[in-house]
Length: 213
Ligand SMILES: Cc1cc2nc3c(=O)[nH]c(=O)nc-3n(C[C@H](O)[C@H](O)[C@H](O)COP(=O)(O)OP(=O)(O)OC[C@H]3O[C@@H](n4cnc5c(N)ncnc54)[C@H](O)[C@@H]3O)c2cc1C
Image 1 (cartoon, rainbow, N blue to C red):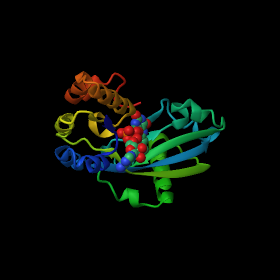
Image 2 (cartoon, helix red, strand yellow; image 1 turned 90 degrees about the vertical axis):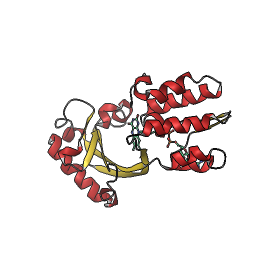
Image 3 (cartoon, rainbow, N blue to C red; image 1 turned 135 degrees about the vertical axis):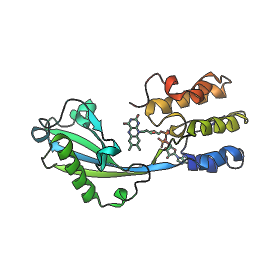
């Protein structure tokens, strides 16, 4: 049995000989790139400025460059435990088809993150450490018609006994959705199509843990 759990371009290449119709559908799946900007502050500089919660999302209509910020030290205990005097924040940039911002130098991405954090939450302190991590083609996109495409991919793959697919490109990018698609793929290999049918028909309703962590 084989479970193909790789991003769409790699899955298309792997399946092109055995499942050409599935491969053609997989080649049509588009991805967005993004960059993460990690900013470490002295806790005494940052904590008072941050609102309650573990971060915020920025809708495009706000006209900011960052699309989200995670207060990593609040969200993850293991990060807070690393150093009690440090607060770690993360911002992300790069919406679908927004390539210009991803071409900017690391220092510019840090600057724009600091600017947008100042505007959003009033954080004016300078970080003591920064790091930019680029995720090229990291996020599969779900345009209108995506679920129908996933259903077609699964139908084509289902014609080959012992073959199943799973991963972020099918039912949701969040870890719970990826895990759910993996369980469904294994059930499918054992002849039980219940989970894969439920996910394909209504991926959000089928996810017990929500769409992301
Ligand atoms: C920057 C970023 C932040 C995120 N944050 C969150 C978050 O906070 N919460 C959340 O729930 N989700 C988050 N996500 C989404 C989630 O992490 C991903 O959607 C998920 O990890 C994808 O899992 P996957 O198994 O489908 O793919 P991957 O984890 O990408 O695994 C695919 C694997 O296939 C391998 N591979 C590729 N090509 C081949 C090949 N030809 N042959 C063999 N192997 C190959 C790769 O090396 C990789 O190991 C985030 C995603 C990104 C990019």
